[in-house]
Length: 107
Image (tube, rainbow, N blue to C red; front, side, top):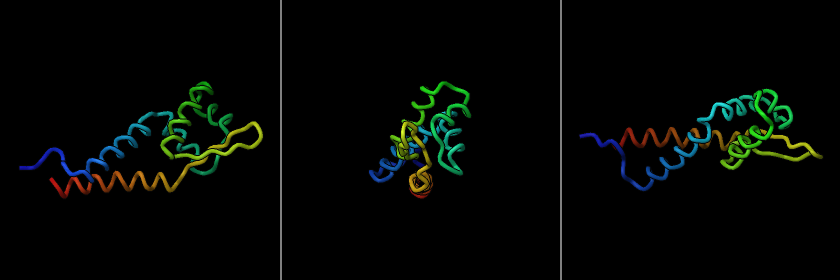
């Protein structure tokens, strides 16, 4: 009989991190921000205009992405520029892939 959930500590940790990652990227504006930042860094003053949402809401989404480590920021004068942390993005995707593979093998 197949288990619905794998009950090892390693898989549980992967599941927890994968769930956190999915929660972060499950919001439409956060995915749009990642798309905006794919090619180069952008100032928050430009990002919010692409999203067509208020700047304070854009800043909230940027904070969520930054707190998870998916983006980085640097300050230049009064402006804050954001860029994708490609290593964290790859790491998060790899973790999700590893979790799904571990679940497939264990169940």
